[in-house]
Length: 460
Image (cartoon, rainbow, N blue to C red; front, side, top):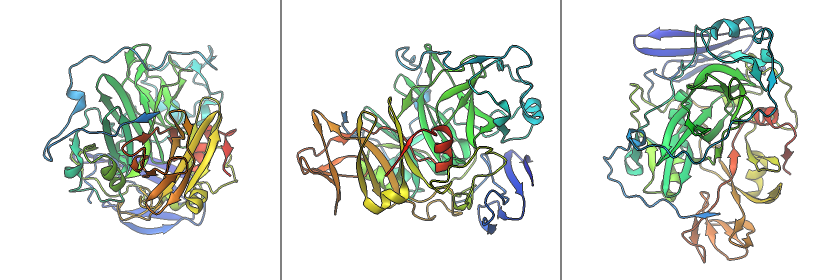
């Protein structure tokens, strides 16, 4: 079995193609249409994937209350105001190994070749076996071959309705009264948005191969880092790089695995994957990444047609052992707390609608609802199959621990009788207008979550 990933340049647009040769195959045309697919052979198949730049078709918080004109475009990074130096992570040497002699010796020849121009301190690392780093992009210095968005443009929800449909999935970040929607139609083609909320710099990231949406504070030791796509993968997950030290960072965990910052873990910011309709209903005055991000691209088609229907991840990018307790590409709500981690499979959640549980010492509620399309299956993201919405909230409200159940209008807590939406907003009852605190959570594919959190609990 042979594998290859290469780049073609068509005019100013870069088309990145992933080709995996074996007895199964899947072919995607330039407009995202799936012309043939056979993923019965797990780990096999081929996919021609059009990448960014291609001209494709197609506690408790108050909810956001900003007012915005439909024609207004918001560019938060245009602000000249300085970032706050309070917050973020402190550098750490936790679990760091120093390799003085031939620190790149265990890199594959290909990875060693394409990273030769980097200034990365390869002698500092938290991973023993460097051969697990795979080349997702195979050309000289692949950094930002998938270009992150460094100057994001946002439009009001009313304007976003012009191109996003209600089932369209997106990563949602709410800080104070500022609610933003990052459509996966855009995130699949850029993977990283270097953004700011007031004086707080954040990175919103999405790895399509792991279905992992994660956000972080970009500050380390009072410095603001800019993150990019390194072109490397580990356990099929995006490996990021920073512009200060060219350290390598694991997207799914937020930990620096190689370089000056090795051992440092970025401060996480809660992200939920909701449908655009769910976001618009909960935050009618919120913001969504605009359809024009300055790359000349039109977003909406899926560059990874059929990927989530596979039975295994792509073998070239995942060399670990699959945890067979769930299908490899089953989606889970992965909840992280300071004392424990736990995964809640979508199949189990869809059967019960809501789960009241405890992860470590945190009382959690997992809500599940229909209405969110799969960004990684059908050719058109908005019209792809409905895989639902799974989100995790803290059940502690003031001094009470709420217990939730499904209701005709969404979710209802037994203690106060308040009705809640999938977005965690109180719709009717004593707590109307309030919102539950979202947790540090992911909607990863099971194989990825299990690879990075092998000791985590599993519901039920």
